[in-house]
Amino acid sequence: NMSAQNRETRKMVRVSAAKKWQGTDMWVTASESLRVIYLSGKWMVSPTMGFSDANGINVVAKPGYTYPGESEGKLIGRIGKHMFVLGNVGETPKGLEGELELCVNDDIDGRYGAGFVDNLGSIIVEIELHSN
Image (cartoon, rainbow, N blue to C red; front, side, top):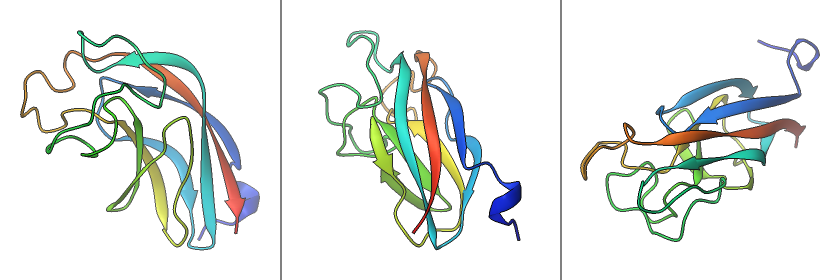
């Protein structure tokens, strides 16, 4: 069991648009949450739509995307099997335990074409641990 003393409470992480779920090495227990704040960088999930920040573009993701129904190119988080939307400023839901993983909202199954292969760029986020 990791105590708060030997864990990072704040960290900057680069998230690539071209890779699926990326570990952050930031972990939570059920009594904690992580706040994720977009700092810089741009990424692109569709060559026709151009670059965006962690809020993504004004196109709703289809079934088979990382998080259908949310903006393409938006920053999505996952702890265990639980997925949630982060965008430019977000917080992990309370009660989850495990490592925060991050992913861009794109065609993760490659159903509609190139999927992650044609993605470009990366963003930098700050992740901050909060005890609830």
